[in-house]
Figure 1 (cartoon, rainbow, N blue to C red):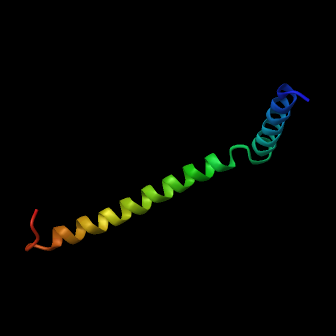
Figure 2: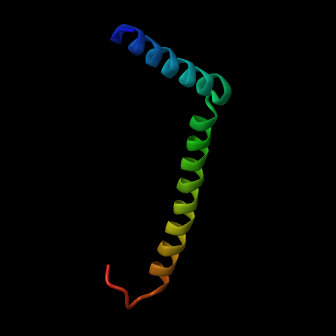
Figure 3: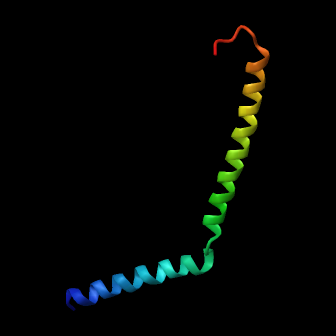
Length: 63
C-alpha cells in the first residue's frame, strides 16, 4: 500500500461527502441567509424610524 492509494481514498471520501451535501441541501442555506438578511434589514429600518421619530419629538436632544 503506497501513499497514492491513501490520497485517492481521501479525495474520493471528501468528494463523496461534499457532493452528498450539495445534492441534498442545494441552495437552501443560501436562500435562508438571503431571507435572514432581508429580515434584519427591515427590522433595523423599523427601529431606525422609531428612533428618528423619537428624536424629532424631543427638543432637548443634541443633534
